[in-house]
Amino acid sequence: MLIGLYLAAAEAAHARLTEYDQAAGDGDFGDNLRDGLRGAHARIPDGADLATETETAATYFLDEVGGTSGPLIGLLLRSVASAAAASPSDVDAAVVRGLTEGTAAIQRVGEARVGDRTLVDCLAPTLDGLRGTAGPIDWTAAATAALAHARATADLTPRMGRASYIGKRALGTPDAGAIGVALFFWALALYRDPASRDALPDPAAL
Amino acid sequence: MAELFFVTKAEYVDRALRGFARDQRDIVRLHTAPAYVRALATNPARRVGLVAGGGSGHEPMHVGLVGAGMLDAAVPGRVFASPHNRQVYEASRSAAGPEGVLHIVKNYTGDRINFGIAAERLRHDGIPVARVLVDDDVATESTQTATGRRGTGATIVVEKLLGAAADRGTGLDALVELGRAVASRSRSIAVASAAHTSHVTGRPGFELAPNHIEYGVGIHGERARQTIPRPPLEDLVERMVDDVLANLPAGTRALVLVNGLGGTTAIELYNVFAEVEEALGRRGVAVAGSLVGTWTPALDMKGFSVTVTMLLPDDGAWTALWDAPVWTATLRKRG
Image: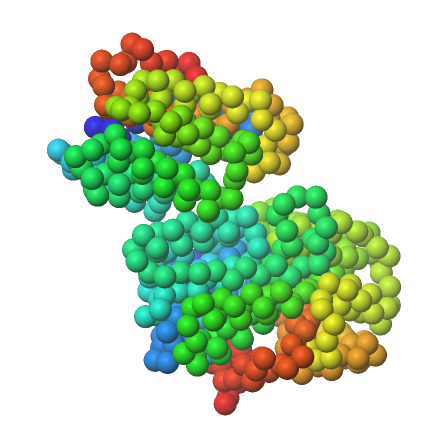
């Protein structure tokens, strides 16, 4: 269900992700994310709970998806799966904890810091905003914030990641990986509140 | 066009692995999908498995160093490209000892990330894992980027000493400490008089004017920052030894690796080693152990590298580890 929504977002955004990664990267991120989610989605058993579907997707991204961002998204999904399995009754808290641990794993592996113009520049500020709120999580607001943070990578000079070798020429184009993980928040918002669709930006227009 | 002798299909790395594993079937076995090379026998005294890997085109590193006294598994990527994390992950699961697995990683971004992802997966499975990073190439000492020195020939020295230590039942933390100490006391420099043949185009990876050399060349076909008129070998070795020693702590005994880059003959490498030993001697450094041959090539590049590992004042038992028995496809010493 969640992965199906993430796949729908990646299908809609495929052309834009490819365009951004061609401008500042190696051009394959749109394919990798879409094809990874297609492959993962096909392997999720019917009626799977959140932990099972994110674990299935994590393994697929870690084992089968090319590039660097694909397996890093696998680490993110793996952490969400572990947290969801540990506390199935409190989904919001589990997802935030999983995303936080997954972001830490991505930073341990990729050594990117905030401001380096990578997918961390979507994840870290979005999660900082979530940890500051009390009570139930407004996932629509979180998705809107994530997309804004991802778009703001267009103003960052790359120091790590896909665009680091072209330097300032990346300015003006958002980081494809950051947009790619922002789409996960878009999917989370619909997953937690199917009525939020009209309040969310169109993923094809990011 | 001087093309490499590869099979015409895209899977020439897989063919080479198959040929290697068949030739060395008394020492290793090849696992496929994902590809890794595993030692047939494991020393029962080992508490930690040793796994290394990286791009292909540097053979015998690492597959030729799998076996008794050295690596438990090696993970080859495509030519000059990092292995996939799944290869590292599954090789590590296979090789892990009761106290886990140690990754020996050359300092390249792709290798760091893919071994790092595998390490996260292993920890998730409850398998202890640690890393020793090898970054010995002084030609990349002062670049502006944050990537640091490249890892090259010193990897052979680190793997030999760690293999012998692992055979003594050394635990994971102590192996990490030893590996980091050896890496921190090892530095290299490489030169080339002709580029490798590109595996993509079949043509030289770069053009070099006659009687010029690349000073500080990399092992993936990266050009050096300097192209210099070719000096006589005696003068060239003097300069290389000075540059290496300038980046090492002072000492009086060292391990030395003279490494061919793929297109350099044994008689040339022994010329180099004779000069290196005398150059070190004039600087008060005795050679306590040496290895001369093609250990970390860049396909068929015509050139060589010199690696010096400066021993600790009290030796730290490093020479005993260096002399300890080893039996791999390409490095063999009896006890």
